Image (cartoon, rainbow, N blue to C red; front, side):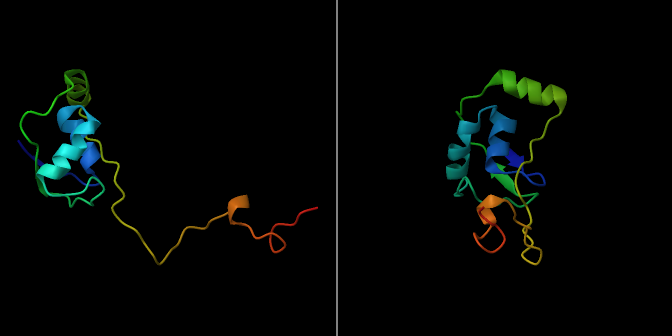
Length: 99
C-alpha cells in the first residue's frame, strides 16, 4: 500500500495511522530504506509492506475521528536558540548562589 506523508508526520505517525501499531514503524522504515528517526518531507510517498499486523480497534478509532497524527519537528531555527533556565543550567557562584 502507498501512503502520502502529511505535514509534520514521522514514520511513527504513519505506522499508527495506517496500521494501528507503532511497532510497525521499523518494518515501514526498512521497506522504504529509511531510519525510524528520518525526517519525512510532506507529499513523499511511502510504501507500507504487505502482511503487517493491524490493530483494527485503533484504525477504526482514528478513521472515525479523522485523526492524522503529526508529531514530528519540521523546522529547527538556529538563529533563535531556546532560552534555557533552571538549576540545571545555572553556574554555581555566578548566577546561582549557595547560602
